[in-house]
Image (cartoon, rainbow, N blue to C red; front, side, top):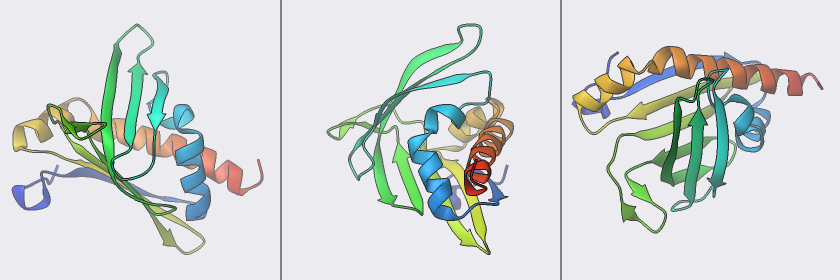
Length: 158
């Protein structure tokens, strides 16, 4: 974990996906419920209004009833095919909400594939450490693997 005040108490993961960015983007957006949680957890997508100020809302559920809370926020920046940034510091309509993080997902062209980088920035070191202790790196790495498997299969025509 290398988060500091200078980088927004960031923790992140990255990996190469053997599929072009437009396919990674398509899978990210159109098949989010299939990859967003480490299996056997599931994601119920409530809202994905991909525009600055648009609502982001989902429910994550564990196999034994864990989770189930509504995770809600707004998108701050969306560059189709390239970048998604959201935060839980606001609900739709810019209603302040107790913040935990700002999330980002980058899809950067690299050769014939995509350099995928995903991470979270936090308001303070304590929130960053809490997120790390929740299993950020193994969890976000697992979902990156799930996203990659779907995107690579789609890139191969399957």
